[in-house]
Image (cartoon, rainbow, N blue to C red; front, side, top):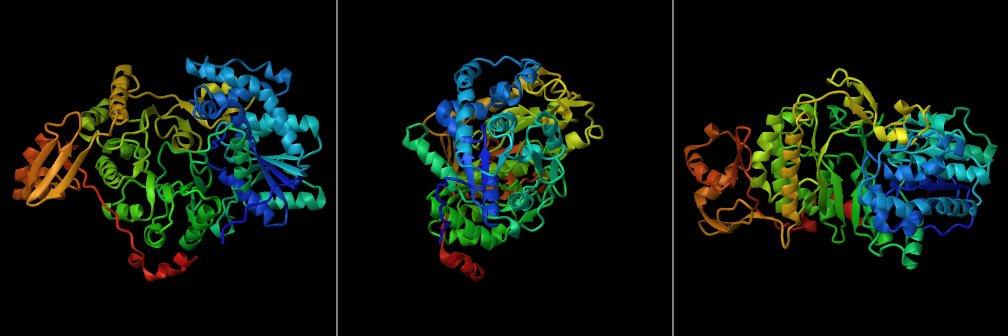
Length: 611
């Protein structure tokens, strides 16, 4: 049996608000989990998606552009600034960096809609006659949350408001408490147990906790974490779609949480990663429960695409979850974040289980830089992963980043040299300089890692009053350091141009470039449509094919047997093999056909299949 959709409420005990500019192409997972936790204690809860309501007025395309606006402008926050503080305070805040080109046009179209939207949102919330309001804030939602609370307090001053979400993690929550004094309480951390208890106590006694900021420790046991109910999301989404204000293609996917923390970061914290705040310790749900949740969610809401919110997939799911999914004929398409050192046979397991999109944290193709990042993988492993994904039609989301303490221009020269040879593999979504994020080693141990003074990212100064404690509020920072690359704009441009050229090849119709091996008797045919291809079709011998197989994993030339070594000059000349950092690696893909059979699933997964 699936999750029962909740009936629309005419009143509720607790109203949870998802303010703009949260993404609307999928439900708000954390808020939905908290709502279910409160309902489990007997409270009535309604989630009001202010994000969807504003998107319906602004227009979906402009709304997405605002959500994706760069940190240097924080357009989403800037739109709510005039309403996030009393007028006498707002007047003291300096103007920010001018918006460029299309950004200004998007801002100008959206700005007149914000004030009436806040009135409409307050009407919608207060019509529910809630006894307590909770507001969530993550990424660019702080000022929308503050403005929403201020508008509600103007009309219902005695109605308690609680702010939570990732932006309230300590010490950011303490900072927000200073600039938003009209918000009654701030809940910092994983609130699965604390927030429902706070609400229950208030409904029974009328008392809120004595502390302005209520701290929550990490949840130790994922069994206490509730399954989300997305009824409120679908109710308002369908309402806006029926009015012709949002695309019928939404939602793009559902969301699922199967673990928290990061098992790799628990051992080796990547220097630039600010995720997990104070909850790095890895915790996961039992694979059988995850299977049941996937089944319930997809059957209830009729959406066959699911994205896991995990920072990294539990490794045991390869044995305990994926085979059961492979045996499920109606399995959804899945997205997971994974570690990039997955073997080819493990990629087969993921593909068979329905994983068709991953985010492996590739970041770079330079082994030296990856070591500086503490990624625990090599450039060769990252290239091999891209090759495995291309062969299995698994989409890879990644970003090429630069600006690491200790980097040299030569680290990028080696990569730029091989990019034309791997342009058939999925390119990054962009090429960007790293930002110092709160909770990352570059923030918490910046001096030890070679970064001098750190200061809040400049865009924050145009969002908050001059006396705001920005060192507490900010999540993004600028660090005082430089590198040979950062000191050379021409070399930065050279790197970014090479990445953009790669991306352009994938945008050019009709197909992305290919370097694909097709078996034939006594050898194979290689189809090559890269820009550097010598020939579109190359017939290779059995010996050359065997050499490609040997070089599926990186090897030095002097470690090869004589027969394999004899094939290397031809394979290098055709760029079927690359010489990267002194190791040889094949870049030719061998397309895989995944055959999924219930009989292939181990007996211990029978319970999950029947769930």
